[in-house]
Length: 239
Image (tube, rainbow, N blue to C red; front, side, top):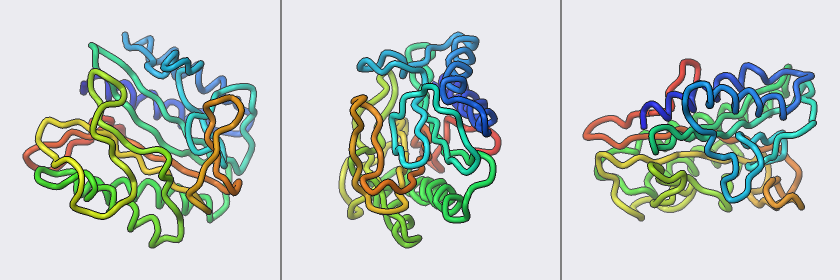
C-alpha cells in the first residue's frame, strides 16, 4: 500500500507542476495516466463506475469529479487534481488544489485553509479517537476562517477497494463513529467552499460545482493509524 501511495503522491506532484496558463486539463490527465502506468500501477479512477479519465480535475467552482477536457487553464484559476493509483491490489488516493499563475488573496487563503484543515483533522487520527473527532476538527477550523465544508462528499476508508468503510465526514460533533485502531487506513479529504456548502452536479453526471458559483478547494492524503502518530502514506515533498 505504501508503494501505491508513493506512486499516487508523485503523480499529484507532477500534475501540480503542470498547472500553468495555456495547459489543458486533458494534458494534465494524460501525464498522470502515463506516469502511473510507467510505475507498473493502474490509474484506478479510469473506468471507475464509468468515469472516463485517470484523474478528476476540477477548476474554480468545481468541487470534485471534474472531467478533464479541452479547457485551457488561465491565469487566476485554481485547479484541483484528485487521483488514485492501484498497485499490488491496493490503492493510494490523494488530492490537492493548485494555483494557476497569479491568484487572488482570497483564493490563496481558501487553498491554505483547506490544506491546514487536513492537518487539524490529522491530529485526531490516532488510536482511541473516533472518526468524528477528525470531522469536528476539520469543520471547526474551516468555519473559524469564514468558509464552509462540503457535506455531500466525505472521506473514506481505503485498501483493496478505493472506497471502504468507514466514511470520514468533514463535519459533525466529536465522539461519534468507529473508534480508530492501528492498521486502519483512511482518506482524510476536506472539501471547502468559499461560500455556501451546497453543491450541484452538472449534466455530465460527474462534475459537482458550488451552488453559488464561488470557489472550492480540496486536499487529501491516505493516512495509516498507528500506535503513535498517524502516518501520511501519500507523502511527497512540498505536499
